Length: 255
Image (cartoon, rainbow, N blue to C red; front, side, top):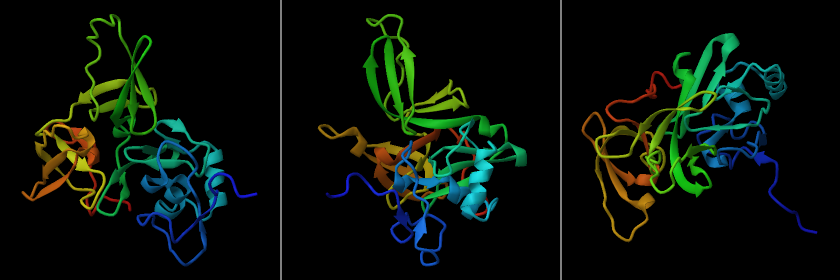
C-alpha cells in the first residue's frame, strides 16, 4: 500500500531559507507540528530556543526546559518543543526575564526583544468573518477566533470589524483593547513577497472593481521616501499614526 498523509520528518535542505541552520551539517531538522502557522511562515520552538537564543545545546535540553513549564507562547505555557510560532507571536521566558516578538524582516521572520509590558498584548489581523447564531465570529491570522455577540441581529451595532482590520489583544485572555482599520495613512509592515519586512505608511489602496480585495494593489512609502507596491494580502497594519509594537532594525533583530 502507498503511504497515507504527510511525512513527519523534514530535511534541512528544503527547510525555509530564513531558518538559522546549517544546511549540510546534519541531514534532519525539527519539523513544526500542525498548529496556527504553516511550515513556510513559522519557526519550531526548538529552533528558537536552541539555534537562535542559545538557551540549550540539544533538543533534549529544550524538551527538559519546556516540560518544566518555563516557556510561554502568547501568555500560555507551551508543552510542545515542535510548536510552530509565527507572525506577532510573543515568546516569554519569565524565569530569565526575557521576552520576544516575532516580526517580518528582509529575510523572513526574526525575533525582536521587547519589554515585559509589551509582552502583555499582541496584534492579530482579521482574515475573514462568519455569521453564526448569537453573533459574528472573527477568524484571525494566528488560527484563533473571537466571537462578537450581537444583541439585536436586525441592528448589529457591535459589528464594526472588517476583514484585514488589526486587533490589539490582551494576553493570555485575548480581550480586544484596540482596533486598527486598514486605510490610507496607516503605518504598516509588508509580510510577504519580495518587499517583505518593509515598514512605512500606506499611500494608496487600489479601488478595483470585479477583483478580489486580497489582490488589490497597495503603495507603501517608507521613512526614506522610497515607494513599494504590494497586494493588500501582504499588508499588516501596526497603527494609525505610529507602530504599536517594537519594530525590527539591524541592531535589534535577534535573527
